[in-house]
Image 1 (cartoon, rainbow, N blue to C red):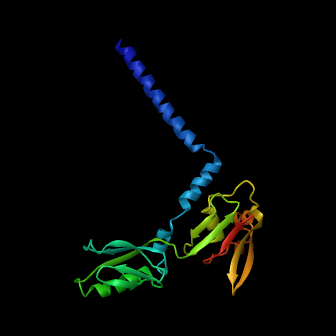
Image 2: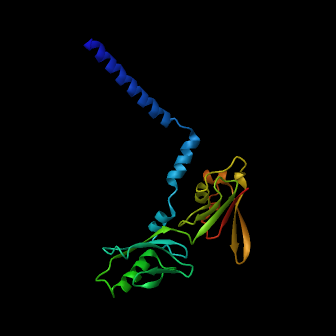
Image 3: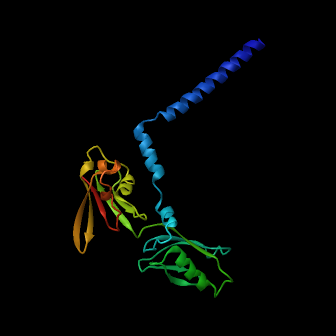
Length: 214
């Protein structure tokens, strides 16, 4: 009887191990399209993190900022940059933010707080970029406005738009840009770009650029 119980337990353990292996193999052998989608999702960094990586990023109107004053919870807060480029903080009232880097703004706030606090330690981070946008329209899953990340290219913007529909003519994509009051049309062949052909067409985007996927 004891021997039979032992055999049953061993068989159960083998079945559990086999099931775990099958589940693992099932995850490994997933649809290639799902793998690509997952890779794009992992590669897609938030605007806030990319702004934090770029010390030269200039704050703009509508951006959302986290102001952190060490050991001063009443002064630590998240604030939007108003259309006039200013933010409102306790004690300081209006502070010019637009046009400054997060580090420069932290220095300005720290200097002004010295009137009220001994040796203030201020950190400024961008939690949302809303001042610099590009637009993706046409045969994509998620058409709309996207935060323009530092050094963002056409290919990177397209990867953020959720992929193409089945009707997309990916060889005939183009970017619309306004230069000196005139609209310029720049062609972009997705199939070439992903193969590294004519890499110069994968341009860095500027605020207001529109990517059209016909």
